[in-house]
Each structure stands twice: as structure tokens, then as C-alpha cells.
Amino acid sequence: MEAIKRPEDVVTVNVHAAKELLSSGYLYLDVRTIEEFNKSHVDSALNVPYMFKTQEEGRVKNPEFQNQVATICKKEDHLVVGCNSGGRSLKACVDLLNAGFANVTNMEGGYSAWVDSGLAGDKPAEELKTACKFRP
Image (cartoon, rainbow, N blue to C red; front, side):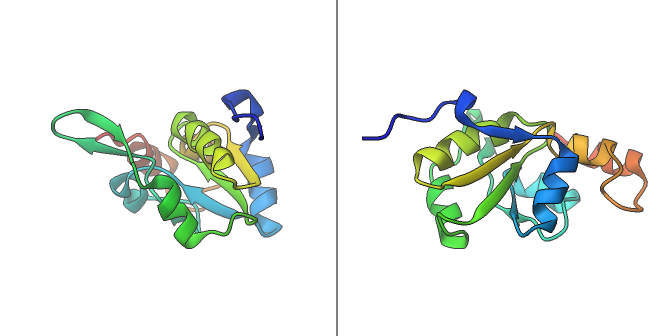
């Protein structure tokens, strides 16, 4: 039996390395909430929220996360996983590795770092940063 994967088992790359991986055929999996994703996101990103905001409990983990990812991605797909600043995506990577996804890479700094690095294109960075720092 394979050992349970932990955060230290996750490969993490900076946004420039992530951009290179995406241009070589990796898929971008955005694990932010739908509200965050709809404000702004990486081109061609897939969105499966890792957590939901609820009235009762605040943020709760999406119990269907792995199943939802498995419906849009194959376990052998190469994925770059990102969130807003890198925390949720790291946890999501651990869960995906433990679910049998073999090629999962965490994007350090998340979408905030992507915007800060000027990779979000010609939109004004301040407008995007407000969007990517969005907290419902």
C-alpha cells in the first residue's frame, strides 16, 4: 500500500514555472470559490471549489471535491492547481495525490501572485487584485 501523501510531498512551482507548464499542455485547476473565479481567473482554467462559504460554519471543505475533479480531469492529466494565495491549492493537491492523481503541481502564491507578476494580461492589476482578494 502506498504511503499517505502530505503537504511536503507536493511539488510547488512559482507562477512563471506554472505558466511554462500551462503552455506545455498542463491544465489549470482553480480551486477558489465560484464567486472568486467569476471575478477573474487564469485563461482556460477549470473551476472546482475546494471550500464553500456557509452561513453556519464559515468555510467548509467541499465533500465532493475529488469526485468533481474526476468528472472533468483524468487521473493521468497534468494539473497546475491554484487558489488565491496558495493555501487551499496545497491542501487540494494533497487530496488529489491521495485520490490517485499522479501529476499534480501547486502554484505558489496563487492567483494573487499571478496578478502581481503581470501574467493576468492588460487588465489593470489593482482591479484584479481587489477581485482576487475578494472575501464574501
